[in-house]
Image (tube, rainbow over all chains, first blue to last red; front, side, top):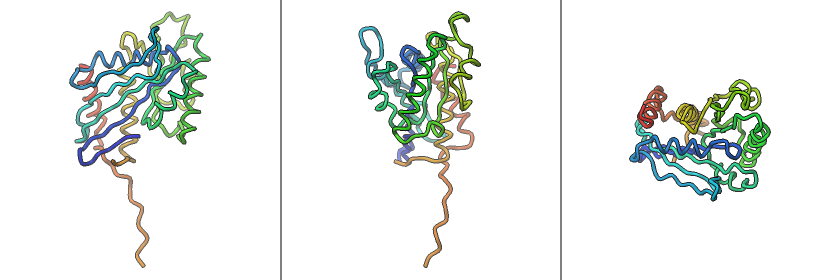
Length: 200
Length: 32
């Protein structure tokens, strides 16, 4: 839930990167971490297994600077994608102001994407949140892979993006689409905040 | 008996052009 502190003139928003295992959620945060000057970001916290799978979550605090006179901070989180970590996903999802659904564009991961999207909807519903009321964007990652292995952005939209929200083609490993995705979800989150804020 | 309180519009905390400020902030952040 966004926090607006009028005394300190601060806004803090929580954005969660959601999606199936190995879709590139952590890679998104790693790219952001690598691009942003040290003074504008906190330490990236990652809890990974020995094989680099996210065990608990990744966390990256960002200082966007002043927006409309408010010092604006974003907290970026990822969830563990593997199906048996649902309790952790629920915890991380709590209070999210916006979600980036990172889908794996490989055709063979089609069912994993659908299952994870359904899991997102279920977990939000469990917290009393209708996904239609939450700022959500899609990122179709790994679009750099050979065409015969992946679905195009249009095909991914047809398969997953029933609400026709913003979607972004990406190759997070090389940074393509990472900035655009973050910008897309940030705009939605702040737009929503502009019309109905939580005051701290 | 006082008049019923009128419904207040939701507070607008961000300026209308916040998208431009956000865009500039993110571009600066990413060194673009």
